[in-house]
Image: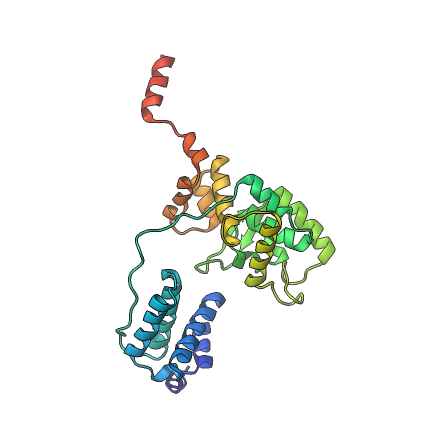
Length: 289
């Protein structure tokens, strides 16, 4: 991209810039939206705005709209990418407060609740999607991008290509999930995408995947938990309680650090009950002798 094209600052050229940098589609969409919202807020092109105007926009989202830190951080990162890297401005003076120290643990569904939810949908395609998300611990963005060739039944694994952080990985494939997917495949005959959208040439949207989850959740009479990501959290916790080693769960989930996976220890009271104090182990050993 030439300097003249960058100088124009148009969203179209910014999109090309992000594409060349191999920014993930979901991230690209968020970055483009952040620039659009900034322009709408000030009713003028984002290209000519000052750092003070940008800061006013960020403060509006924090104070008036009361956006969560994570949402504000997406706005901030998008604007830093636009002004700092795309337009080549010197280090900007706009910023957001650092992440709050307190962090909520995710809410979980019990095994019984998951079973009710998965069986709440009569639609075979919807049930197959939800079962795959839970059975393999997938993000919804990963599930809707699956292709039939990613289901490696001979290895009993699912291949996830270009997941979060542009990483490929393998995760577990349940026999029950495989049986359901085979039934679904025979009935729907998907093309390029396993879970297709309005036509077989395009994948199901993330929003549609979320809607399917909320519908099933309502029909199952479940009120706790949040979005479809709850199934991924529940998968990890239930696997830990079943005796799966933490390192294996880390690999299935695609976590970069084991610290991220360790949070599921705090979510599993059943797992903690199995752990004994070293004092008890000492006396047990003494009893044996």
